[in-house]
Structures are given as structure tokens and as C-alpha cells.
Amino acid sequence: MLSKLRPHLYLPSVQSVDPRLLRRRGIRGVVLDLDNTLAGWNSPRPSREVKAWVQRLRGTGIGAVILSNNGRGRVEDFAGWLGVPFIPHARKPSARGFQRALSVLGTTPQSTAVIGDQVFTDILGGNRAGMFTILVTPLTRHEFLGTRAVRHLEDVVLHHFERSGLRVPSSAG
Image (tube, rainbow, N blue to C red):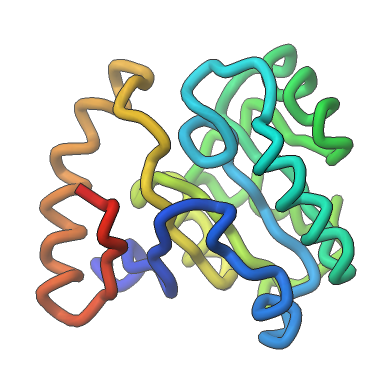
């Protein structure tokens, strides 16, 4: 079970994910988390840096979809700023949302990456679906109360992985 929680990569931010390297790895689609991955919790718009990164992603021929546990209004508004499709109410780590993301992207699990900030939703769900998983450091510690409670357990799991060789970004805390 612990192996399903281990990301393939752990990076400081979504912007530190190089789309060219993903493409060379055979990745054709990316499933993106919203809160604390693309923007701070409940931030209404993406930053210029995130917009530029999504443009670089598109420039390499990689599609993107936002998969979020948030409600439709929040996700639809944010996705509109980026011009990407979205799936709200995903119930991550449930397989159903990840399967829907594959359908939207038109990719296979082997040609799809998941990028998110939470081990027990994004990474677990992506690994269970057979995707390449990338954990990024949360943008802020301001988040949903339930998420804050799970972060303590997540920190224990990440510390275990770090001791067993997972490269942890210097900005991770």
C-alpha cells in the first residue's frame, strides 16, 4: 500500500515540471490538481507564471485537464482562465475521476501524468490509475480544514520516503 503513495517525482512547483522532459518520457496528457498546485487555496485566477507554463505545455503537444474535488463553479471559472477542460467533484482518489480525465485527454494511463500537492488524493489516485505521478510542494498552508488534518500524516509518509531515497525539494517543509 505504501508504494501507491510514493510519487515518481517530487518537485517544488508545477512550473518546475519541464514539459519537454514529459514529452520525451512519452507523456501526452497531464491531469492537474487545482488548489495549492496551480493556485493558492480558493484563489480565483491563475498567476502569469502558471498561464505561461500551461502555454509551454501546449507548445509541446501535451494536453491538460483540471481534476478537482471542488465544486463546478470554482473549477469552471479557474479553468476558463487557462482555457483547459475540467472535471469538478472528482472525489479523488477515486478511480472514476481519473478515468474521466483520461477520456477527456484521449490518452492512456501510461501516457498521462498527474501533478498535485497531496499524497492521499492526487498521488494515490494517479498511482492507482497507472499514471506517472508528480508531487509538488503546496503553494500555501492555507487550505481546507480536512486537508490540514491529513497533512500531518502526509508529512510522516514523505519523511519515510525521503529516508528511502525520494528527492525532496529544498523548499519542501
